[in-house]
Image (cartoon, rainbow, N blue to C red; front, side, top):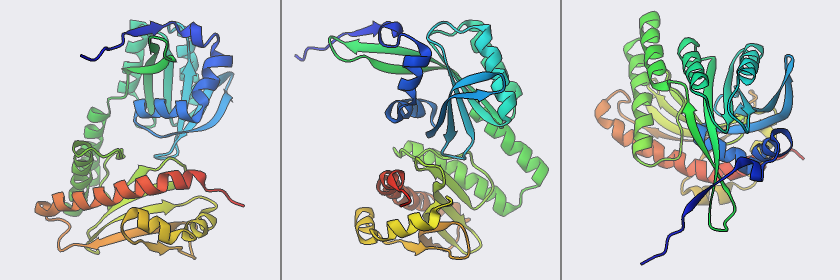
Length: 319
């Protein structure tokens, strides 16, 4: 019979003596920020440490790769307090549209309730997360961090209410309503079929986007009812998109061999953006009987493109 180790909880101060000199620099490292990203369900890109926002300095300021919005992280290696809650509200008012992430050793019940309340009363411009951080080890192994979500936005109820408001206020056409349903069901399909892709909130439009780990780059899925096609693409809208396109093009054969299929490389000379796309013609994009087939095709192509392009786009530089 195999011998199993026993988990031992480690005091945070044993590893991080101070918040500003130890914990914040540790969390700002790319590999550690990736652990936090996985917990939150969003891709984070570091913008700055100790960033001044109004009269205070935020511990870490990031951007979400999903939509480029601000993500502000405030750290405490102690129990939450009113002072930090006040700072978080100042940050939110200063940045206008932001996700606030409050990390602490322990959350008091009143502060958890305060974040829940803020998520209830604010719109999509603001999101509040509360996370408790722990350290664990087995025997003499290095201590390993664990983030536990204490409070988070009620995305499900909010997305439902948003969809209801859109249907009520925009009087969605049959096509728009179908597109909204298509992407809503596709997000469920990806989750149920083991994809690592995290879909954005569903909207009544012919596309949806996925993060690929760098701002200015997105994976896109298309459900084009006008042209009767579905498609998967890498979309580049960075200021240096043309240069990045040329660099990737030099490795076209290698990239397509790794993907297992060919792409249509569109430089789009009259536009800032570039796209690498694969399309599939379909008989009737609105026929729900065929949607599982469309989902399977899109998942296969998007998963491959995420696997092949994610490490490449993160290493692109302008010489």
